[in-house]
Structures are given as C-alpha cells and as structure tokens.
Image 1: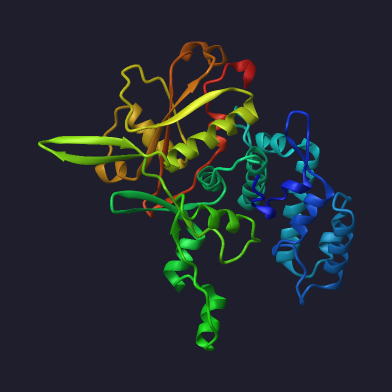
Image 2: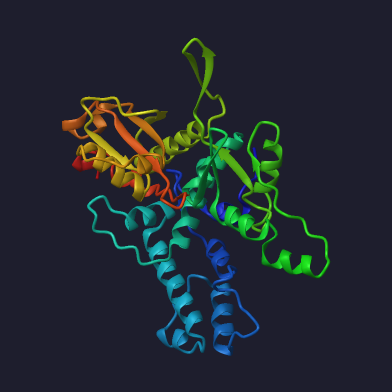
Length: 363
C-alpha cells in the first residue's frame, strides 16, 4: 500500500459506512494552514485572533464583526470564502454530499466557492477511492481530475503534463522564481526534471507523491497514446493497444468515480471513433469536448484543426441497463476529452455524474 498525496487530508477525514468522507476539525485546520489563510508578518491583531480561534475550534461560529475587524480586504475576502465553504461542508455532512450539492442534476446549482476548494475536495475523495492502489499509472491519471494538464504531441505520442509545472519549466527552465534568484546569486539549483511515467521510473513517481507540495512535485508526464500503428510494408499496418495506456488508467479511475457517487457499475474504455448509427447519448468530460460532441451529434461541420484537439473518445456501458433511462436503456454513452486552443485540458469530473442518462428516480 502506497502513502501518496499527504496534503489531500485523507487521513484527517472520517469514512462513513458507505465510504463517504466526513469532515473533521483536523481536516478544516489544513485549510487554515494554506497560504490563502496562513498568517503573515503584516497580519493585524484581529486577524491573528481570528486565526487562533479557528485553529483551536475550526467549526466555531464567526460573527460578522470578527470579519469586519480585519484590516486587509483580501484577508476578509479569503476568510469569508473559507467560512462559506466550511459551513456548507458541515451542513452537507460529507465531502461527497457537498460536492453533489454544488452540481445538481437539474442544473439549478450555483458554485459560490473558488475552484481551489472543489479541486481539494476531489483530491481527497480520489485519495480514498485509490487507497489500496499499487498502480502508478492509475494514480497519475487521477491527478487529471483535479489539476489542469497541458497536452503535447511528440513523436506520435500524446503526453499529459501538469499545467503549472510545465509552464514554469518553459518560463524558468524548471527552477521557479526562487530558484532563478539562487542561480543569479551563484547558488546551486536543482531544476525540475520532466519524465514520462514508465515501469522503470514508477518507484520515483511513488516517492514524489509521498512528498509535501513543492516545486519538485508533479513532474511526471502521462502517456495518453492508446494505440500504436506499426507499418509492416506492402500497405499493411499492425495496430497494437499499449498495455500501459494512460487513457486506460484514466478510464478505470472514472469507473470508480461513478460507482462511488452513484452506486452504479459501468465500464469505460477508450475508442478511436464513434461508429454508431444509433448514437443516442454523449457527454463531454470538459467544456471543449461537450461543445464538439454536440456539434458532431447535430451534424454540424467541424473544422479539422478543432477535431485535432480531441484527445480521446470513450465508450461507457452500464452493467445493468435497467439503471438507465428507459428510452436509451442498453445504449452506449460516448465521452469526449479535449484540450483547448492553447493545449490546456481541464477535466470536469462532475460532468460524469450530472449528465449520465439516469431515470428520474435516480436523479
């Protein structure tokens, strides 16, 4: 068993009989230690007092006057957002219930907390789902659900890298602003070394996941190439499915995601195209894929350059068609995964929970 993502707060959460996660005071204290709420030398007396009171009792009520007493406007806003998040989480009872409440299936939800809080919830839930995982590819694929990725194509391979790390690498050579300062001062600097995850370096990846957040994290790229074509000559092409496909690992994570929230067994597998005259249902795993699949389904013309941004398609099948809407029971659901024009992929795992064709009683 691997001890990965220590900053996820998994160990500070209390699982219910269903396996959902109840927040605790220790879990809420993790948010107080984050840079957005941590004290700084400029913190006023009122902020220090509020921070100390919340650290002692993270679920205590906070009077409006306590917030107004904070001299720094940004600090007031940060605490107000945290308290809104905290109160909603405590009222929901579990991370999962709170998450589902943010994205109701009837489309009436309103997200009034920063995306950061949502990503942290997703990470904690995934840490619980993968608690027994020994597959580095699966855990790296799970990072795509809560950390934006930058997609690149090199040598016929589709690679997914952490957006923050990749952009820092391009801008500073992988040393960051502080590392650049040290370099200018003549101090030795260890730059980030980007690596494509493989069986040979999987142990190094596990070691990285056990470390605290820092500039040395999230440096492993995931190979999303699912099939490899080998030219055999005489017009013959041999197509091989990669045993260590990042897309296959991602599909497995998404299966567990659906089962955990909806108690529904599904199978998800990558496909090259939608070759289905009876195509009835689809959903995008991100904003770009949603729009593309809608256009393709409606028969609208799509520019080739836009199609090339499609990272993958998936086919989802319900193990029990009786758990689907009656008018599409037994039909496959097609999923799309797509980067934007800047090569960035922002996977939205809530789409998979909100947009599946479930009967009204299951909504």
